[in-house]
Length: 110
Image (cartoon, rainbow, N blue to C red):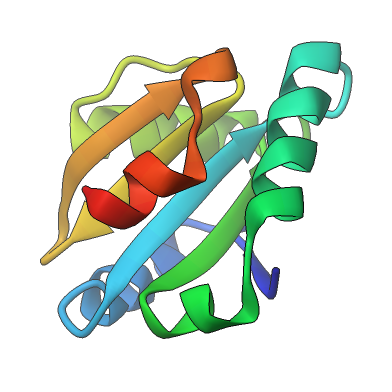
């Protein structure tokens, strides 16, 4: 997966513009959580290169950027969870999953 690192609120404007062309995935990851590691690993194992045409992927390390993670939760109206996958389309969160419910097939079909 070609992750773009989400590190600042100014990137959210760019992300929203991208979401008008194709869907954007924000993966909120806790580097201290084994469930988060497992969910991330499963997502990466099932990812295929052709998925890049459908979804742009952003990775948010919520331990380093907790304030940004809180801002994302507030902006998109989705309560904070970890791990969490948010699918953004046309500037809005249209689908979200958490923990072991994070499933690439469902993200692609959402």
